Length: 99
Image (cartoon, rainbow, N blue to C red; front, side):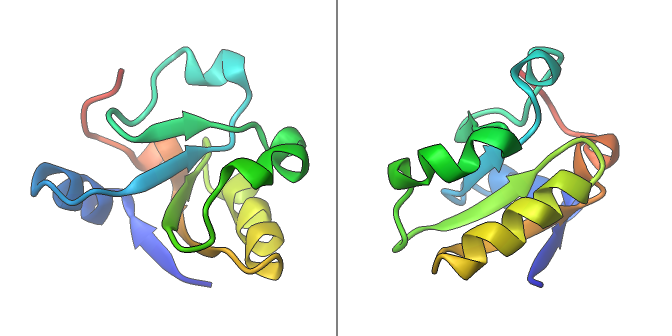
């Protein structure tokens, strides 16, 4: 499983890297704060039905509250041919800005 820490992701975003982030938490959780800029919310339970919105040519960083749901999303999307990275520790490890 490819992984990235919250600090590594924050550094890349601050350096201007264009990253696609998928937050797999429930919508009510995301309202409390999400990683700014390129984050989209697709709750884990809807991922199967919305994966057609994703581009297999892109790389996606998967985020949840603590890393469990994003690990499940990783396994699911990887099995369908997507290029994904799991953010270790989830939003509990995120110290950067949120929106």
